[in-house]
Image: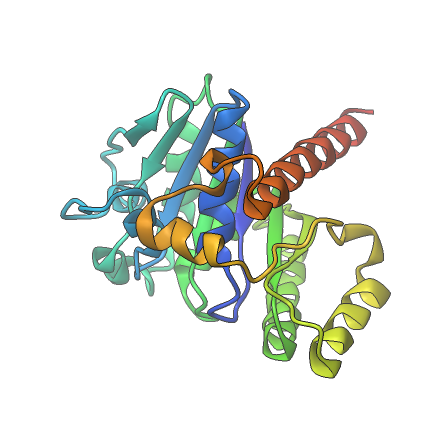
Length: 252
């Protein structure tokens, strides 16, 4: 099982939209995928489940009683998030429990685990996700998200240096970036500093993506003539290829 944190310390960059559509894209290709909503807002849970259940199943990772995830379809399962995760946000001991809990569940059939992280820079929930993950996937939207990225990577370097984590970068995903001087500057910065990590597929500002999480309509299940279907299909294939390349290099 490969664990990937989808994270940026800036809110509103499209983390939930990215995970929701990527997870369904992977499942459509019969890749067993587990989603973990590790955010107190529970936006990913609401995207998957029109009527969200009470309580967060992700909370069980911070305790001693791990529960089963909710089945979305044959290839996709979800650990729900929500406000009850707040009681673990300041709990330092929760980091170790989350890592042990997530890695200790029966995941022999799960190939990819995607963790939806919140935007808080001080939350131990994010520290736990980083500590448990093999890779991070970073959505980037605007100039403010760059400051979130810089702070995130300071945390990652510190945690890696201290032996708490061994997380690597899978890539940066451009999200809803319009053709303005400001946003072109953001892309120039990413290309200059993270050239080899930038995904070629950009997730554009299409109505279909906004509707996907609001109405539980994954882009991969739209008509193939819909531009959003083409985008998420291409991104899913690029994600699979990149992950395979990373895993192959790790075993060399």
